[in-house]
Image (cartoon, rainbow, N blue to C red):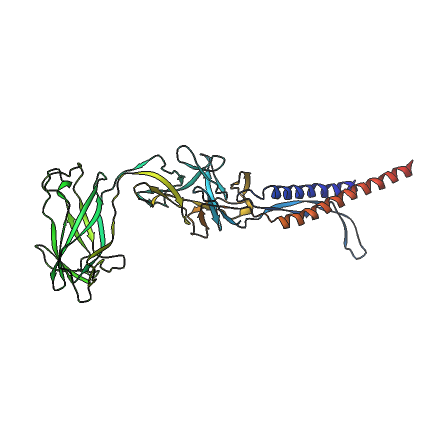
Length: 431
């Protein structure tokens, strides 16, 4: 009888709505959980006649669950301080894989396994773009992200160096400035550049390693020349010994560095490393000389040095940047070694995704295939390392919906009991 089947459809639909609300409330504290809403639609109608004007007289057959709609709005990012945690803010999903199939997830509570692989809480590999020599290749196929936790970083010989020095124009004595560099075996070597005042805003320079750096105990001839400064103390030109005067600057024909070929001529380096050939940069990042001359009144000084070499280093930690770039720090002070970049994915129809549990989603024909990219590109969101995205469940909304669903369930239940009474009365009339 329709009088029973119609409220039963309501009870069934209301049960689904109550289950959805209960699931939302149960996952209030689930990382990156997305709340859902159950929407209803009426069932087909039976035409039992027409009115005098020809309008159809129709009787409905009840209700049904039309869909469960997921709210993909972004949850609040909560700082955890754990380097493997990542909160995604904006559009997109992290891409993860079980080894055969790729899935999407918003839950960034990642971990590292015994082999240094970045994995989800259920063991799926987190996918990203590989890096070679610190350069990420976003054109390469996605690969499982690995943190080189058990690797030792090999040494790198210094090939460039610079110093920020202020020479005292009133000085009459030589000033030695030291820069620590590294050879091909990671051994620390000290390059000493001695500046000697010559008068008339001119200084000589002499660059060398100590004799103890060479296996023969004898150092080759120092690399020498002169530097000319203008009346404002700016370095304007250099004259290498035996060479022509060259203007220091960035214009065509200018020079910006001095070649310090410290390869030994009297034997190998004492530690067995190859000889050093270093470019001494004379200009800073803005194209301004880093060596100047002023009347300091307190003597010449060295305020800073830089060089690009390092010794052997052990893994210390890693961090994930806002663009998903993964950088590793080593004990040798090399703090920004890029080892990969997290990939993000998205689909054309978010509501078409299939929820698998554990925060994972699978693509379907309805969602379309996933397209991948990097953070901040093609409408994809950014990341916050050391944080997690919270659930977007709104408890006030859920309680309001819970009351409505409860009242609807009670009303449909009341309809069933009423129709049962009416039916019983009709049976009693027959008897």
